[in-house]
Image (cartoon, rainbow, N blue to C red; front, side, top):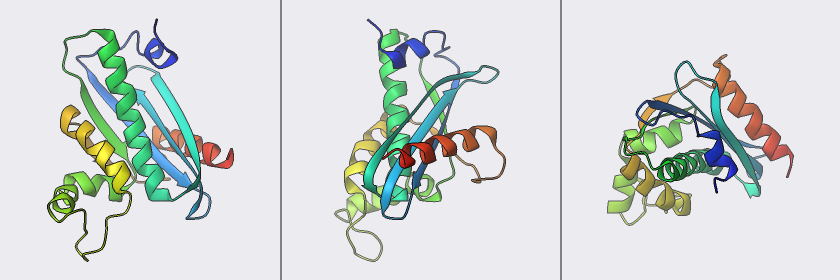
Length: 169
């Protein structure tokens, strides 16, 4: 039986590019946090969206969590579909922190340095990075930065979902 996530992916074209918009929000930093993602394919309506929250978090944690949850949902739906097509994903985020961690190879440096940053301090959010990195290695997504609060419809939508989730804590 398909769960709700997989039902929303029933008409997905697995050989086509998936756009994964992600965002995190925190009311206070730290404070109650929310994350959200949505998935669509070019020329199609939104296939799936989801949000969640944490009572005590930071904005950066919620930004990472949004990407993690989005990739997990995509991978699960792809596996359940039985499609042999390679899944192609573009992650669109307004978080330079998340983007640069992968695009600039920060995560590889952190791992080489025993999860210490360039200031020799422990990397924050290691628990989430350790979950996200294998998914990024496996799925090989393309990354794209989107300026937040600049009128991008899907970025605004995930922002609203993340804020709503944070407010629901």
